[in-house]
Length: 360
Image (cartoon, rainbow, N blue to C red; front, side, top):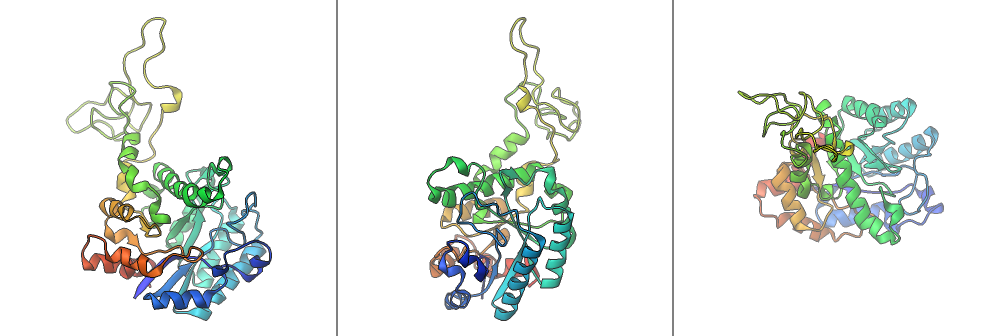
């Protein structure tokens, strides 16, 4: 048996309002095609609730409580109708007010949803924003995985004329940057029980773990070492064992560098204001990335190998993003089966990792 953690279906009413890929309406056909490929359970959700991914300039975040309640009633009924082949995430706006978040929590409990689905950015703002604090507190309390999906219009998409690039590149990169900001915000450290799943194989995050670690401990603004530690010590950790506090700043963070004053009449030594920081995490970012789960909804095998090297095969979940994508299902399964890992690890990606994470 294979479990697909990344699929979508759409409320019939939305087909009357917006152009939509027809596959989003053919639920029975989608499930039959997946069964033929050995995929016996698909977890679906809407990354826009009662909105659309296919119309530029549309405000997907202006949905009322009643509208979202109606959408989730339909989704819960649809899951029950197609059980055990279908399960679902509940959608919400992570910047929503207290009423919305309370409704979301109740929806998950009452509707049997297996997780939450939110966007990696909202109207150009990433999830490190303080506006998302209450959402992550609610999610951690619920104890359900949070599926991070790119929005219809990712950050910077207004500067991309070709919408195909918005779909296939811009959204991919929104997941990448969204994950990076989430890690640096300290949310995973403050909520150690929080389970995060990143769509589209986590974007390019596995290729950037080293650069994120460098950003956490930049050395190019002066000779004083990282803030709060001697040479080689992590920022915010205080003096290293047997050593002295670094010259870069007090324990707990501060501006990197700490070099000598600039020459008389010249620019000051050390970093400009934009390069000054206080770390909100106490370990290198790659430490927290190893806690993240990613799906396999990316046809690049090297991307999956990089994720395995960073996170371990136990943090990969089979996913197709189908529908709406017309992913060749047999090829998607075959890609996992062809990875240079053990048979047990392949079985984990195809089924057991999801079964464990979602408590199926």
